[in-house]
Image 1: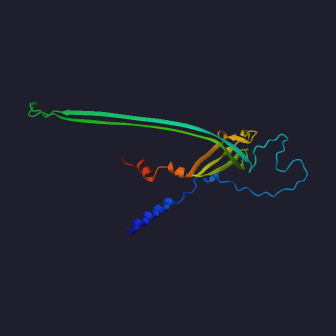
Image 2: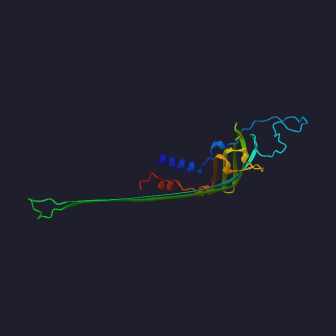
Image 3: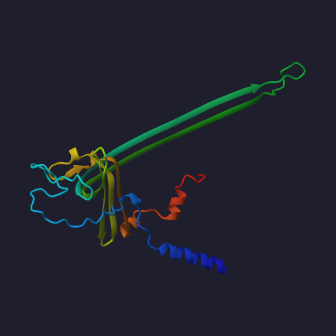
Amino acid sequence: MSRLVLLSASVALAACAQLPRSGPSEFDPPALPVVAARGVGGGVFAPGGSWSLVADSRAYRAGDVLTVVLEEVTQASKRAGTSLDKQAGASIRPTLLGTHSINTTVGIDADRSFDGSASSTQQNALSGSLSVVVHQVLPNGLLLVKGEKQLTLNQGEEYLQLAGYVRVDDIDADNRVSSQRIANARIAYSGRGALSDANAPGWLTRLFTSPWMPF
């Protein structure tokens, strides 16, 4: 009895514990090197800066900030159906001393059928903007960008994370790029708190709706 009480108390305490924030570590901010301030030599061009007289403020170096415009809309649907029907029958009428005067007919019938259908529809939409940081510049000029936004609300927290590769040519004059132009994009939108917990089914509901249920 005491073991049961201890087990129940442990489960209750574990349920009260705060879950850690979900999300891959690939969205972590970069550890940028600390660059010592360079003295001003009186020149027109600064070392490490753009040498073009008509250069804009687009990101092109590690540590630069870039704004990603989220324009994600996805829609998927799938439908499947299966119907099986099989019938079989057999009739046997044996004879008794060469005559059929006695009704000894034996019949065997079998009927099997199966009918199943499934339908699935999913729609997702994500809009807004997120500022990311250039982590690395590849030899071919691609920019590896990563960023995260954390919103602390009165009923929980929300996280928006993004990582991927951006071409400098896809960045407009306002230092913005569409999320549809990001290669190998990994976008995660999650949250925790009272609202997130209210939208999640309980463990008993998940047990009854799991594929392991025999009925």
